[in-house]
Length: 241
Image (cartoon, one colour):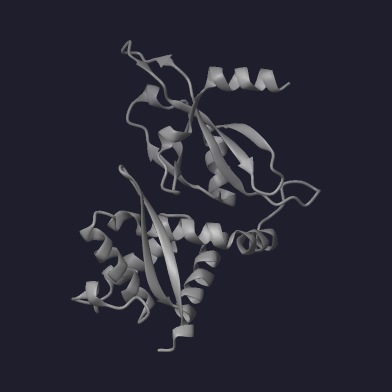
């Protein structure tokens, strides 16, 4: 295989001890096809898959479900075959405790290096929010919490909404949880996936329809890194007036 057909893919993984970097030699044509498929899935928001922006997870799932699973996947060269390669990467990372983060690392790599391409495709694919023709796309800035007392007399700090930044216009806005969830589910976001679950306790959810609506980071960060209290948010809003 010619050296010009290979590129070095530098991935970064986050763990409790900090950043972990690893380099892989990949076949240029295969990786470019991978990126193209990834972007198409990201833009189309295919609901067939649980992760809105992760084609990597989809490939891993398909490989695990197919009949011809490579027995010695750890020894498969990444440049040989895309599906076998992703599985091989996943198993190699499993040995070092990072198997669940492979698609997050690939997501982050592609979002960082192909942001303009993705932005252009979104402009062509997504509906507009008003008559100015401004396309929608969000980034999660903060999860807004408030202190309240449950019927059992315990204090909690549930998420009541999210502060989202528009990808194109640069404006920010506070949206209640369900509204923010619906917008991210419909139009996508750079660093979150829409996630809802059935309520376990009545006081857990102010929303109707028996669901709790959450936005979950998919950029390797934890949701508590995005927290801000409703009181602090209101104070900042007043200061900015």
